[in-house]
Every structure is written in structure tokens, then in C-alpha cells.
View 1 (tube, helix red, strand yellow):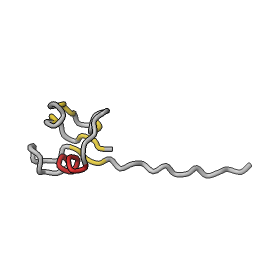
View 2: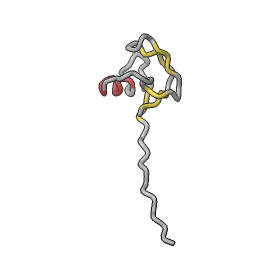
View 3: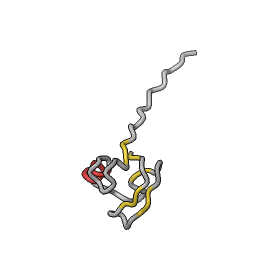
View 4: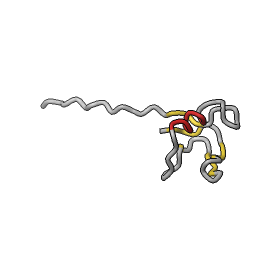
Length: 67
């Protein structure tokens, strides 16, 4: 999952506006790994990352309780 860290218009999605905290991409949209890396770098038009990868939480198995 990716999260928006700076407001931006996605020029490859009909200029859809993303706000800080939004999930990227929006529901129903698929983007390439190259596009994600581009937006997470300083090589985009804003010259600063606009999205970041959110680490996935690993669910720990529950311990069985006896008794």
C-alpha cells in the first residue's frame, strides 16, 4: 500500500487530486511499479516525493491458552 505525503494532481489519472494521507492509487486504479517509484522519488515535476510505501503489518499468531 502507498500513502500520499504531499498534495498533488496525478496527470496520468485525468488530473485526479490526491491529498496528504490518501491511499495511492485510488480505488479501481492500477499503476506500474515504475510509476510508484517515480512518484516516490525527486524525479517528478514537483521535485520531491509525493507518495511513500506503507509497511504492511504482520499479524502475529495468537498463543493458545490452556485451561
